[in-house]
Image: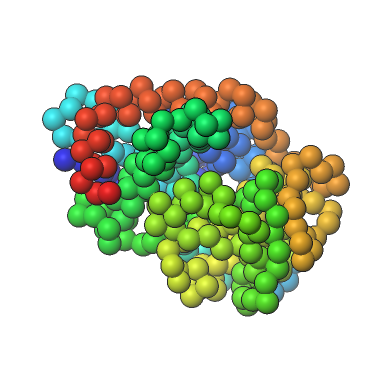
Length: 324
């Protein structure tokens, strides 16, 4: 029987990355170097708080609201196996602290999404599918296990669930796609975009997690974010939750995709993101994308294979056959 456990780690100046955390996870990555860890964390929170307060029309020299972040890690294991608990996902849990009233408002969970299983799927299985080298079984089952494992974290899906609230994930739009504005706008999320062409591998992958894609560019942003959410679970969220979500993820993407999110140009009606664009303002926090793409992701894919997929192969196959 699959068992799940939730670990909660506050992301603040005392934060030290857990050895099991993915080194490419955004908040982990900017905290890896102990000599600049505190500076990076302080800089990130300063940017996030400035953005959030500006949404609420707080004077620029004031910081009434402060964003607090917990990293929530879901550990999974099967009973009666002598195998260590495996971190199947890491997400963020956001709180909004009102310094005037000294009260805390619950924000969204999700936002940044970290998954070793996704590393394996996108860096081992997907290249084989694209090159037409995958078996029919690999093609048919691509993303299914990941989707089931993700949904089983939630109490409204599985008895073993450990999370009460649906997650909303926000990531960068794809540099391989084109986006066009629609007639739809939202008072917080801003201008709505549609992804042109057939659904991408990423969109289909998230659908297997029970999540639908939406693309919005809020006021003050220069490019839309890609949101993944349960049906009707984005636009109807409390405005404070949405502002917090955007403030956190737009600033994180400025670090990791500065060519898109720190661009000196604002996305137009037809938008083709580019990671080779040079007209952007470089952020003060550096991210080594070359290390990520050439070294870390392959290490992480091997980690999930050796520590989770292989040891639990028989149980995972049963789980797939029972829940498909």
